[in-house]
Structures are given as C-alpha cells and as structure tokens.
Image (tube, rainbow, N blue to C red; front, side, top):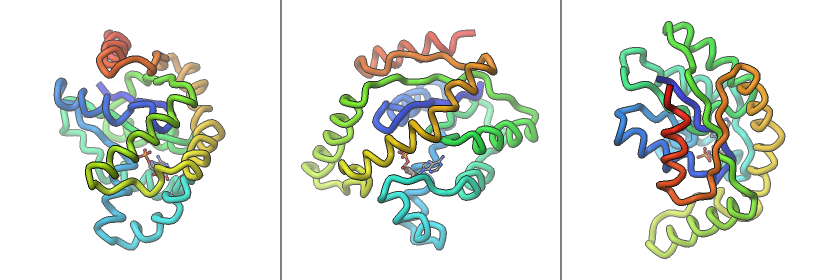
Length: 192
Ligand code: AMP
C-alpha cells in the first residue's frame, strides 16, 4: 500500500510515519529528511537549497521530484509512506507518473488536521527540547520561518486536499490528539 501523509508543519507526519515503518515494515520517503541530509553532507544541491529551507520556502519541484525518483524502488514490498511530498499540484502529478511507471498506484491520502496555535506550540517545543538536549535545532524551527512555512502550506499544498478528495483517495483525521489517538485514526483510515 502506498500512502501520503498530508498536513502542515508540526502536524506529526514524521512521527506517525516512523511508527508505520516500525510496525508495518513500510518505507518512509521524507523529502525534508533527504534535503537536510544533502545539506549536511555538503552536496552542491544541499548548498543550493539551504537558504530556501531556512527561510521556510519550498524548494523547486524539479529538485524534490528528482530525490523521490532516486528513492522509489518497486522491489520494496511493504509500500511507501510519502511524508512532506507532494507539496504542490505539480509534485502530485509527478508522483502519479512515477508510481505508474513502476506499475503501482497511490492507495490512500491521510490528512492530519491540526489548528495553527497547536502547530506553533509543537514547533516551538521541538526547538526548545532539542536545544535543552544539546541537539542541533532545525534552522527553520523559528517563528519567522514557521510563518512562511504555514503560508506555503495553505497557498501551495492545501489545494492537494481537494485534489485527492476528488480522486476519492482522501481521509481527513483529527491530528490534535495524543500520538496513540492519531495513530489509531490513521490505522482506521488505512483499513480497506
Ligand atoms: P519538512 O521536514 O517536511 O518540514 O521540510 C523542511 C523543508 O524542506 C520545507 O520547509 C521546504 O523548504 C523543504 N521541502 C521538503 N519537502 C519539500 C517538497 N516536497 N517540496 C518543496 N520543498 C520541500
């Protein structure tokens, strides 16, 4: 089963994706993680996107589609969880094409709905906790970048909600509960 976890920054996509990986053997494809890895390993592409990411803007469709193309491997049987991808309609169309080239389909899109106030407090907490533990704080986990990230989400990514609804693939769930409550909501959404 191939699924998308859709939702604004701080909605819990990454946390929930990791649980699906450990419990269902699915493969998480997070473009955010891939871009951060490219940044820390100092590749040309990583250097190119660092400022864009720190500001909270989206990197170009070509770059993220290229990253996903490299990682999509039809032999992975547990299915893919797309986390933070697609973020634009262009990326959504590219994903359909890439999957059909592998003879695969998108099975479900789960939208995690979370209020803006909670998103801000989750991200601020994530930054504070990382700092307290002496771990690196994400360059975009600050109030200015978060405002841009939310704007990018509402302007460019939220149209995907209507798009996948029209395709009959969307289930929207409450992302405001505890980790276990959200996990149960996702499990219910993934039932055939
Ligand atoms: P994330 O870890 O998903 O919150 O992504 C962190 C940042 O990476 C985003 O704010 C964007 O700058 C960039 N990014 C991640 N995924 C994408 C994508 N699919 N399209 C464009 N930019 C992305």
